Length: 341
Image 1 (cartoon, rainbow, N blue to C red):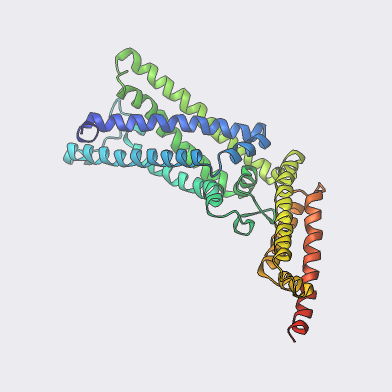
Image 2: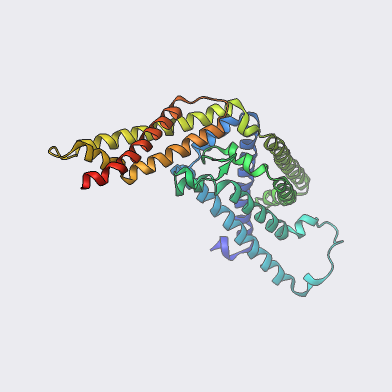
């Protein structure tokens, strides 16, 4: 096949996947800008791009592009080394007309890949992947002493950039990305056929400006995120607290409704000729009630820590329900032995 059997075909695949990745980086830096200017809108976008089928398809497609780009990069590098033979051992540092980034694209790519792994661990694994695996707050990462819902990217910005080493690693990764993009953009456009003497200078200028703007914005965003995270902005801003409170209020209402439905079901299915107190005791000593109390405490504690300046009626109602159920559990345990006798 032409795309795999010829050098030109392999370069075309590299250019095509590289174009998609450059466009994704441009989109990503724009999305990060939303996190700086409108953090609540950024959380809404994160919720929209959560574990929905279209977001999962896009994530898998993006991952496939990265894999293909890396495989073809290694393939072309090995091909070029075989073609040069022993010439590759000659000193080429001063070779005229050959840029440093051009000779070190593989090394730069490895640095960018290592940075990408760190970024995925800090964000994707704790957001989209966590949402796929479980909806239980007990399994989520803790931010400011409370579980952070996967849809709240601002809390994971707080978690990541609250660490001193994060901006250092990011800036190193961004520098490698700049060199890689700067060479890659004009190289891929050249592969598409824009390789005459007039366009070569223009392509290099386009590559320089595009990569500089994108990477410069990434660096600026990393610095600002770090400053805001160390000021605990993402856990103290009132607009964000209101957004977090809406989430926990919804979970509190859902949990209360589930308990009410389970209680009604248990009473409906109790034996008509049986002791009602025994049916009540059996319900309150069931595992579901203990799970309800544990979940209610998690929601109440999370809301108190992530929304310290707000009062959330639904969460307060849930906390009262949990206290009542806990009392009923203790009472049911004390009367169950007597009823069994």
